[in-house]
Length: 274
Image (cartoon, rainbow, N blue to C red; front, top):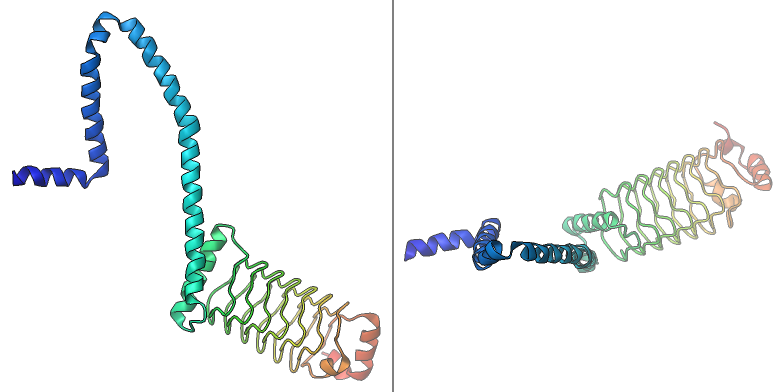
């Protein structure tokens, strides 16, 4: 009796084998009950089988595919909800584990084409976020100190009071981002695009902004002390003053509106020379 029980348990632990045995048993039962129709009235039985086969195909086509699609959609929504819940769980938790778990969830959401993510007060210091898409995401007061964001898409993202000190944002897109009071101290923004970005009172001290595109940016009160603005494009900016520009490390080949260009050339000749 114990041996039979062990065999039975070993079978039910294997779903494919169990399904095959059930199919085999039902096949023998159906054929046994239908045997007399095979012998005495095969033609009519054959027509009925064909009719049922067509109905089965219709069920598979309509109901089967519909149920499969609904099931997959439900699973996808559940996974997305789980990733967002995990980000909420790690919010305000400042640890390496929290940072790497947050990054993993961000990348999983990106794979599901979710880019607008709530990352307020999230800890993401020293993480690898290269090439991620966080378009229109909310990263207000997030900690991205030393993070890698090469070619990241942060267009229209909220970065107010965000800590991006020593972060690498080379060739990243921050077009129309809201980064008032953001800290970019010692950050790398080489060839970064910040067109029409709101950078009011942003801290760019000692930042590397070579060939950065700042066209149309709002720069009132921004601190560019010792920032490298080689070939940076500052045309059509709002709020930029000569006092801010006097503190930069270099303005060699930087682009300004005509009036500002003349003023800089006259008042800061050392900064526009090589």
